Length: 150
Image (cartoon, rainbow, N blue to C red; front, side, top):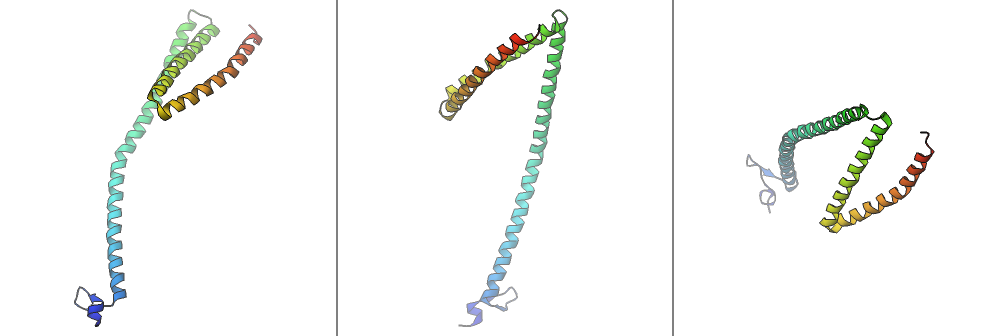
């Protein structure tokens, strides 16, 4: 069998050895793969830039919301202090926040229980953890409250 039959011919009609033919094909495939990877990378970067800016804007909006809630809380506290003693106003605000947290937490756990499956199991674990923590924190808080000077 001749080299022309065993190998192949190059673009200019010359006979190419089989091992060289494999190298040429491998180089061509590698060039195509590199070009495709560059194209995909360019598309991903182009698609992620607007998303990245969106995430930064959402994060900044969240930070502004937290600052706004803090400012509103301070405003409400100052208003309460205008007709209540400072300690009573602060205690009232604290009690209000804790009550809101308890109600919202219970509603969230009820939603997780209603969802069933893994969500219900997670809700059960959170319920257990909250109950255990409350059983330790509430007595400690009551003891501290009795000991504090009036």
